[in-house]
Every structure is written in C-alpha cells, then in structure tokens.
Length: 407
Image (tube, rainbow, N blue to C red; front, side, top):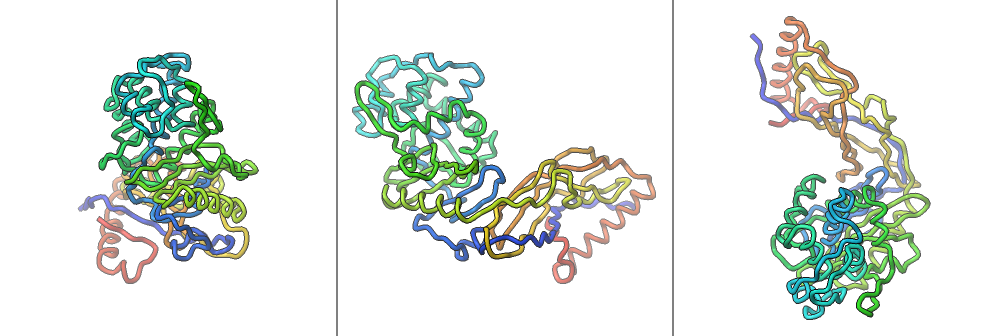
C-alpha cells in the first residue's frame, strides 16, 4: 500500500568548509570584531547579498523620516510607469502646508500654500530637505490622499517581500502602527538603487533652495569621505536617530540601516565607523558557480528520488581578508517534491551561515526535470519515505545529523 505522508520541511545540511578571513560578523553579535552603541543595525553588501554586520536587525522600529525612502520608491515607480512626469505640477494643499509645512515647525521644503510645484522639485524637497510638506503633496498628487498613498506603500512592500513592515503615512508621522525593520529597509534601499538609478541621484544632491530658503542635505554621510551617495535620516521622539545610507568604494556598494541612536552625533559617528570597517575588512569569494549542483531535493513518485538544485548564477559572499573559519549551509524546502517536477523551477532556498548568523539567503531551482516514475518505483519511493519519516521521527534527532525534519 502506498502511504502518502504530509509535507515536511526538510532541511539538508551541507558542509562548505570555506576558508574565510578574521572572525567577524557572521558570528553571533557578541563575537563580532566590531561593535556599535546603537541598538539596531545591519550592513549588507549589495552585489553578493552578504550580511557583514547585524545587531537586532529584525526588531520593529519606528522609521520616522526614513519612511520617505518608501515614499520615493512609490513615486519613482509612478514615473517609470509613465503615470506621472517630472514636469507635472502638484498643489500644496492646506493639509500639506499646515501639517507638513512652515506652520508645523518640522522638516519642510517651505512650499507656499496653494502653490503648484513640479514633481521633480517635490522629490528634491522630499529627499534633500526631508520635507513633510513635499511628502504629503506627492502622496495627494499620486493617490488623492495620504491614506490612499499608504495603500500603495503597503502594496510595494508586499511586492518586495517586506512582510514585517507596516506603512501608514508617507512622511514619518509618529503612528504606533507604522513600523519597519532595519533588515527590510536595506532590501527596500537596494531595490530603489538598482531599479531607479536615474532618480536615485536626487538622494545624493547636497543642497536645495526653494522659496528662497537654502537647505543642505540632512544625510551626514554625504559630507564624509567614504563614498556615500544617498538615502535618508530620520528622528522623532519615538524613534531616536535613524539612518538608511549607502556608499560605494572601488565599485563595491554597501547599504546600512541603523536605528535608535541617542543623538545625531552618535548616528553619524557609528554609521561612518561601520562603513569604513566593512570596506577595509572584506573581500569577495566565490562559493558556487552558476550551474554547479549545490545539493538535492527529495522527490516523491518520480523516476528519480532526488532533484539536483542550482542557483542559476554565481554564488558569492564577502569574507574577512585574514584568518580562517568554516561556513555552513542549509537547503530549505517544502518536501518531498511531488513528481513531475519541471526544470528551472524555484523550489528551495540556500541559506549560508557563519556561526549562528545567516549571511546569505538565495533561491535555488531544479537543474533538470524529474518525470513521474513507474508504478513499482513510486511504490518503492513511498516505502522509503515512510521508513525515512519514522526514522527521523524516532531516532533521527539522536543519530542522523544530515536531515532535520519538522511538521
């Protein structure tokens, strides 16, 4: 009799035995060779996706004005789709003026009540001046209201896999429901930089004058000699001082998200310290070639009991320049896969660790198709899966370290 087992999450451990450099940031935070005084931070390398440093990076935090990175991303998307143009003009409503403009005595581009302002100037007011009036005007111009625009922000977040972030307003107003995580803000920043290079440039402009008022960019990294070229700061009482920043040196782009600093000075100093340390301490190492078989997924009912898995692109990680340590990896998938299995289908994820900290998380796809097996072979596969399930359930945790299965 063929016994059909419920799907299990199979985690296959693979030893990579890769020599890396000095003991650093993929160990638990306490073992990292650099520390930061801020409570929440994460630093990633964009090309490889490597996490170079993290500290409580999945905690929900109040974004304050760093939420304007998402506001900009939505506006850039509207521009890219042709639904708005840089020369379009949006009206500064009484709500935008009173809530986010000069009367509010907060960050503002000082746009005049009922004036009409070009989208390009509103973008500069948003990302250079951190203007709340600019954010509200853009939201109303694109979606009719702040709440309508917040819906677009949430939609974009879902598209990017930002499952822990909640967006309720475009300018960073203190709202207990509006939360992000530092890790997801680096994902958002990386998407914006890669997708809208022609618009990302506004983040790097160092000053903007509107209504005869000249303001310098609030991002302190732009005045440091570290290759910084953009993104946003934020600060309200509920958030402390935060920053999402990016810098490039020798073609290498890093993105940092940092939250909860006690002062603007601490925010700037800690950000600069982390960027400089990362640029000096790491080099890129190839782990797998694009078509190299990384591991196997078990297949139920197939002509083969396993499907080889590949990344489809070179898998690289940043590793410390000196010293040595072993990386480990896990292939994670819902399985066993049910035959037939097509070639090139994403069915698993490769997770690379150093110590207990995850440094890479990449999709894996099947290298070749697995057709439905003959009746005797399907019966054999069912029997093997049943016995394997019993083995893992009763003795696997003590004896078998190759597979870990959970319901």
